[in-house]
Image 1: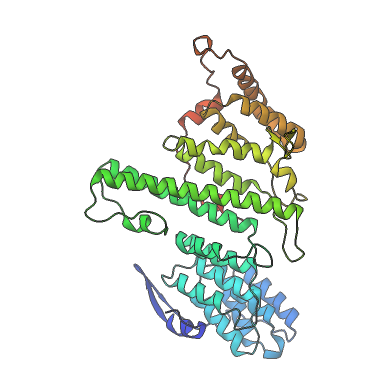
Image 2 (image 1 turned 30 degrees about the horizontal axis):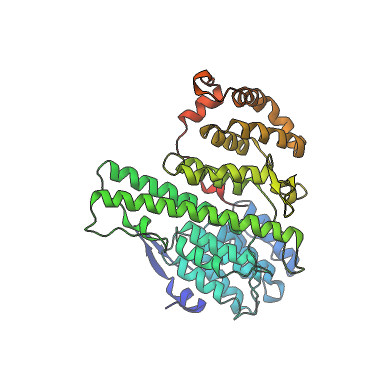
Length: 434
């Protein structure tokens, strides 16, 4: 049974997170030096920012605590809560929330966004329960959740590695309106799947080396097969491989849903629904996962070829009348005004590397031609790095079909690096949406 916010607040006096003991403390009320206390909310907010940015957060909070209530505002308290949230100090953020309410200031969307961030970055073992009840309490305070708040909750699930709840939350989202999925929503879910694949491969390596596995990482996703204690060694390996396949399939489904949703919104935008844009961060998550599973799940991983072509072009589409036309690349259809990165060196290398592994040399040639056609500005700084290599792939693509007449492909610097490349390690900083 989940608690109310007030109950949670009372119960975070002292809680254990493994070997770390976290105790709840009152907010600071005294400063290290004497400050003038503004009576105006705007000036108080400015004062708080100046002092906190100088590295004296306790002093900044004490200034707010000493200020008269008429000189405070929801904005000021949101700054306090957000400052604690960025540091992962959940108990302090909750205490600041209580002080805000005690002074009669109503919470806003920003308040709950900050509280959810504190849950995500904090080390409390109760973070998921607190985050869920924080999100549910928004209606109680008359605040309608937006997709930003949903993403805040998903970030908690991501940080706490609870993919089952993240997928359940996603499946409950409407397709239109303020809570329709955003680019960040899809990126968070895709990143979770990619991390799960990395964890499962670590488990598989342990099994192959004769070591026992950690059950916790295998039982989280609701549609995966769990490993029982009496399961044989060979069956354990088969189950882990199955879980990898299921996780990667889920990742592909997330991408397909994003692409379909984005194309639909681009042509049928509802007034209350924000448009979906494209950013390389999401595509890189998908392509890195394709590289991760390529040796074990080639038929599935090769779907990455179609994803690359869908995003950047190089393929032709047959319409309802059977007429073959050049399809509009997804990245072109979903381009924004420099708000998102649509092409960079990393995504080009991942795309070329995946096609190279599958010996789809003509795909590389078509991809590069399409990039030059649709993204000339973005390609220009990449030309020196990739053009000579693409030329080599052009020569390979034009070789005779008879394998006996083919020469071995040259091992360029980039191809040598890809040949040595293993499963990329998961990185929150590289996959996490801004």
